[in-house]
Length: 444
Ligand code: GUN
Ligand code: FE
Image 1: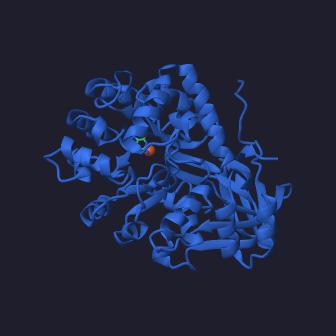
Image 2: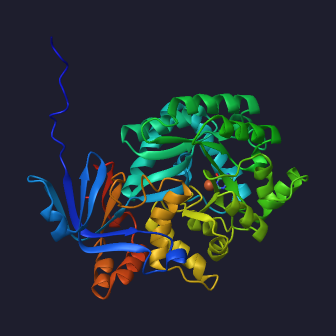
Image 3: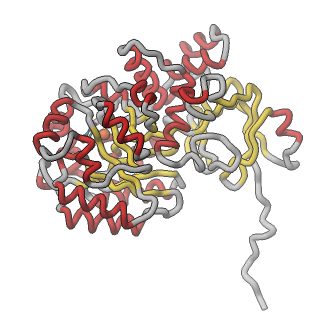
């Protein structure tokens, strides 16, 4: 009797990575700065079958390496978990840096025209590829992503992400009013199309689906109810929307939903809050709303480059901390002005400075990695370098520009090097990006 070839004698090939290695252990607001991170000056991480199997001081880890294990040694570099972007719009890649407007005019003048092109699957495919290339060039390995109203936009995105074996979350926009006709669905069609996408993609490989009402003004109460219904019908779905970004937007929501007690309550009324619910912005929240976000274990995506670019306002991170709300960082491209989480951190620091507050580099680092993973309920999979985690990581280059190189010579410790990296760094500082142990981007 012949048997199909057995895989049992296939050699499992471990690979080791040697460099300075840093990951986050928790929120500095809870653990204190000193206990919030783990750092190995001469560190080594071992990866096998896409997962991290060992992490520690290189001399110690090397003693336990199987003979023949390939070792990659990076000099003057820092290995960290891949960055996690908790709010971004892939269809807005082509209209990033659009001049002159605040939110509502910006949507009408730039965003809605750009999103109409995604009726064409070929366009969606092309932009998905450009977008994912850009994320990986910037060291971002997981993102929570808006599509457009067109289901084909999400098929294209997930196909591209699946090919690269990335952990990605996305969804079709639900929008049945206050938008151009070509960009609207109906409560019925939005529900049906979302359901089909969930059946096709949710839980496939490393992909997850997010029910994605654009924001309260563009969905009828009937449509918001269908969003709540979908969340009840399937396990593990995300809910992704915008909240309290811009003052005119907030007034508009109050006028559209006079029977509800403010913006967040519109979502709450339709059962859209919960541990996998992510609200972008939350720039203008009262304490009651913060309390409600915290008690439902909902998360906020802090999007500094977008909030500055659209003149939306300054996110109150200490308020979110006081209420123990989960917070991640979002680029919010195309209202955000950079795919780089390093640049996003740089701007977050300035947002805090404008409020007379400091943003410590270990806190920023937490927000861009483990904080983002927690906001997405993915901390068991990604966001740290804990053995058992999926091997999504980046190699950061301390010499990515002549200025950075020169500045680093004056830096006395990790804290300072990290701050310089986050202030001066951008895509040039990303030497390599790995997803599930595979090299998915190499700068050089
Ligand atoms: N609110 C509703 N839609 C959008 C969008 O596309 N971008 C941002 N920044 N805010 C929104
Ligand atoms: Fe957004």
